[in-house]
Every structure is written in structure tokens, then in C-alpha cells.
Image 1 (cartoon, rainbow, N blue to C red):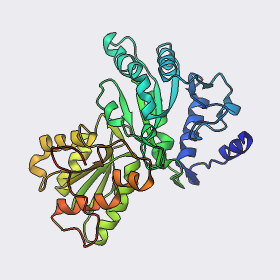
Image 2: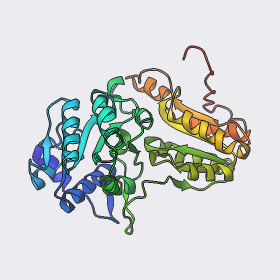
Image 3: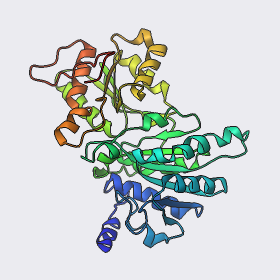
Image 4: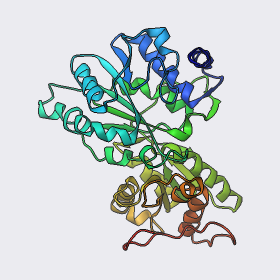
Length: 359
């Protein structure tokens, strides 16, 4: 089995050829390991098994156990070790299996990685990159399926990235490793098998700015990560009805690119924020508040939010699908924003109540 997986790992295609999100991430790691001897990868099953999601397949055979380090089943221990290595001048890339398990290392991430530069008066930068899978849609039940990246986007001292495209998966790692601050990279589990071509001229990604993935003049769909394909599909659906939806991919969740978000809303005068996190205290709530603070007079309608139901993510497929933002709900929210009724038989996805018990 290991040999088969290794052969599969070797099939990743160069730029301009077909690849997958998983292979793009692997090639980014390979490039980082080749270009800087201080870089190493550490985490559960990243070595002989090739990573829980196959991202590091074949890297152990290529770079050896000193640089591809299998760690014990203790997130607090190996994240703490990564922070220590970064303080000592190394450039560790730490992989946590899922965002849910990262909570076991929250003390290390919040109380150490995010604070040491400030507490030391600028003397102790912590240049660590922590990668983890986030999101639902794969029937892995609640303990493997939540979207908690908005929690980390709340923490000063961290940079939080959410690559949603093949190019971002391939080229976000290099600038992340060059950042003197701790960088968290959230990889949505539904994206690993996405395939396509990388542009021949693709290169390092600007991790300071959001990207407009589709222009439009009637409503801004603001999203990130695994919700980007849904927003793009919703934009296609809306276009068939004569509504031009502009799709903004946040890319970086902290710091948020207020300028790009605001410029989009100034063009369209309406906004729908699509966020797989829970609605209460969400990243969508933060974006909505910023739009009200900074662009109140640009808005012709209330900001709409499409978020996950306020329940632990269910296991059963139909229940899981019902709990997550879906294309129909995004389309319905956009139609509400532009003042058009949803077509007969469509998923109307009524706006949740402001107060009261969820559900």
C-alpha cells in the first residue's frame, strides 16, 4: 500500500499541466524543503503514511526522517516543539490533522506563538507555519468537520490563510514561510481532490489581499476556502436570471483586506457573506459589521449572511448537507439583496431569527 501511495505522489504535474489541490500543496512543500535547509515538516502520520490526507506522500523517501518527522499523538507537544524550533531559527511546517484537534494546542498557539513577539519587545519572532484541514461535507461527523478558522482570525499576532484555488494551494506556502509571524493555513477537506491546470505564469501569492474571482455589478458574494466553489456556482445560477454577482475570495482571514471588500461593495451596493462557520460570533458577522461601519452609505440593502446551522455538524449525509451553506441558499440570499423573489420551488433559505433558540 505504501509503495502504491508513493507512486501516486510522484505523479504530480508541473505548472501548466493538470494537478490537484492535494498535489499542489505537496509540490509547495517539496519546493520549500529543497530551497531552505531550515524547513522541516512535522505532525501525525506525515512520514511513512504520507499524511492523513495524502499531502506529504513521498516526501519522507525524498528528504528523510530528519526533515519529515512523524510526531506522537499529542498536538500540544508537537506544536510546542515547532514553536521552540522556530524560536531557535528553524522554519517548521506543522501539520494538524483537523481544526477540531488544534484546540488541544490552543495554549501553544495563542499564549506562545501569537504573543511572544509582543511580550519580548520584538526580540522573539516565531516564524512557524501551522497547516490544518477544516470544514465539513465529507460525512466525518462533528469532531472532524467544524470550521473554526474564524476563532483564530480573532487572535492578534497570527496571520490566517485560506487557500481556495489550485494556484493559492501551490504558492501560498512560500510567502507564509517568509513571514516573521506565525501563519495558520486552513485547507478545506472538500478541496483536496479538486483538479485543474495551473497557469504557466503562476508564482508566489500576495497574501495581503483578497481576490475578485468573478466580476459583477449587482451583488458581492464574499467568501473563502471551501465555500468559494459554491459562491461561483451561485454566481452562474444568478447570471442565468440576469443578476451579475461579483465573487470575492478573502484568501487571508487575518488581516482582512477591507479595501478590496469595500471596493466590491461600492460597485455592487449589496453584499452576501458566505461562511461555513456558525452564524453567531462568526467571521461573517465581523465582515458585516465592518461593511456597516465603513460602507453604510454604499449599501442599498442589508448585508445577508449564509452560514452553517447552529448545531454540531451532523453525520448523516442529508442532515450534513442541510446544516451547511449550499448554492441554493446563496442564490436565495442574493435575490433577497437585489429585491427579487426566489423562483418557484427554489431553496428560499429564510434568514435565521435574530434571537431565540436555534432550529
